[in-house]
Image (cartoon, rainbow, N blue to C red):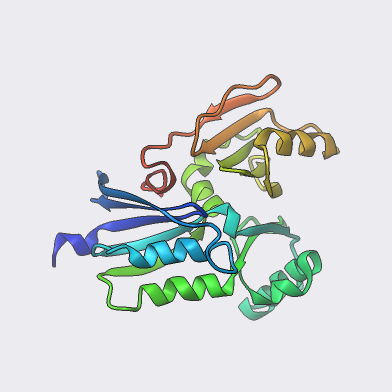
Length: 253
């Protein structure tokens, strides 16, 4: 079998750019081909249509593809634990009901997923436009040499990669993109809160610190596509992000 079919493709979809890196090897991963293509955030009625159009123009090499979605395209929620659920169908309905309570009728058109977590703890759930998921799958069904194996929200991908860096005393995991920040508060055992919003990452976590009923960690694990400056009152630790910043950062995930 050709070596190329054992390669991994890490593809990042964001409003203004699509990035791709090709990763070879398992024990000693090597980043090979890397590309970034600009796209038009205003193309189409949905904010992701420009990114999908740019991806469709890329000639993808052979490999197992993971598509990572910018937090601009994802909504998150902590879904309370329920002992009454039995089976995948009931769990899916429960997650969908929770998003509908927050977002109303528009949640009917979303594809949702809840991450595994400790029994009794809230579960971190994500939702994306079901049409976005369908469009990505369609791209990989049209004779491309690449094979789609996973579509992941940015937060999920980074948390899975860096969860071992969260100490027992807890930390904020903050993902910083252009005009958007996503902040996950983890106490070292379970998720405590998640917020994904436009604007400054610092304003976001400062607001959440003031809302909290108890003391929150000062440690901030920052995963950013741009330089992040130290700020008073917070212990900032920058997570390594190789080039190209959006997709290559996930090459070890």
